[in-house]
Amino acid sequence: MTDSVFTPGPLDRSDRVYVAGHRGLVGSAVWRRLEAEGFSDLVGRTSAELDLKDRDAVFAFFAEQKPRYVVLAAAKVGGIMANNTYPHDFLSENLQIQVNVMDAAVEHDTERLMFLGSSCIYPKFAEQPIREDSLLTGHLEPTNDAYAIAKIAGIMQVQAVRRQYGKHWISAMPTNLYGPGDNFSPTGSHVLPALIRRYDEAAKSGADRVENWGTGSPRREFLHVDDMAAAVLHLMEHYDGPEQVNVGTGSDVTIKEIAETIASIVEFEGQTVWDTTKPDGTPQKLLDVSKLADAGWTAGIGLEDGLRTTIDWYRTHVDSIRQ
Image (tube, rainbow, N blue to C red):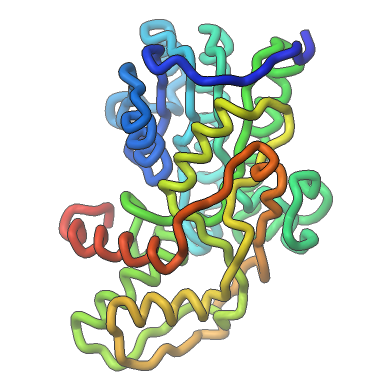
């Protein structure tokens, strides 16, 4: 069965929505957004309650819950160091999670599924800003290629389900995300939360210097996770197509600039030094968000405002957040 004619529209607020990964950065934001929008039957399970790598357990969960809608935000994620050190874990665990959830969703007739990936799916030297059709046109960034391959496989599975079963599932590829609920671990976090933690601790301790990896020259695009959650719902209600949709702001800054902004907000007055023996990663990752704009959505939270609220959240929750 191939794609049939389908016009997306408002999701039924009374029908069941399963948010896979509802305690994570993206999943928790999606959950908050759906609650705010009046969805009354949200379902989530922690990893302790449901191991998404356990195929039998996932199928049993879907047989019991039968969600009409699914947001697949569950994933094993991490920064450059974690991805580079544990490539097998990032490849294997993400493939298992995706395949199990999507296979169970097919088996139990999930109507709409949103698969969330990452901008790292695109080639390292893709033309900027990166269009959706840049996928599979060049070599990946070696430090996170295993994770990227898993996410590419997820896109392909969504497309295969559309072709074989005619289901109107979609994929979205966010740029770098940040916000409440992020992972601020010194070894497992992405660049922005790592910088927030580093500079805040330095400011509190009165340290005279902060050392960061690389040169600070790579350019990165950052999207507040609450904007991402809004985009997820918007796309589920307004977009249908086999091609993944980029989700971002359409503008970027250097790592050095983001470090300076964070240092200023936390009132760190010392020196920043850059360890140029450490890898920079991809030189630039700016997404072309034309398709997203055509679907009627643009980001609304400015970077500095988003950073201030994220830093406030971090300081409030520093004793209880993931370490």
